[in-house]
Length: 69
Image (cartoon, rainbow, N blue to C red; front, top):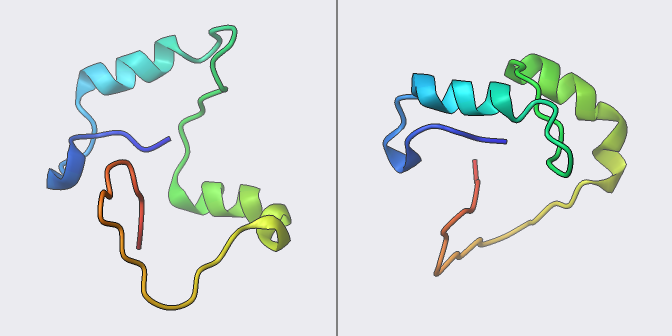
């Protein structure tokens, strides 16, 4: 789950962090855990064969909600 202030960067505000803490054990909401990028990528190593990849031009006309690198 990515959070913060849109395309402007700057990271999360205190209220974003508080909201995530409150969502930790809400029934019906996916589990949320604070972690750094290293821990995240270590956790998904087992899923690498199942991850989708894209080669070539990536044109997102309406890119709302898209995460790219």
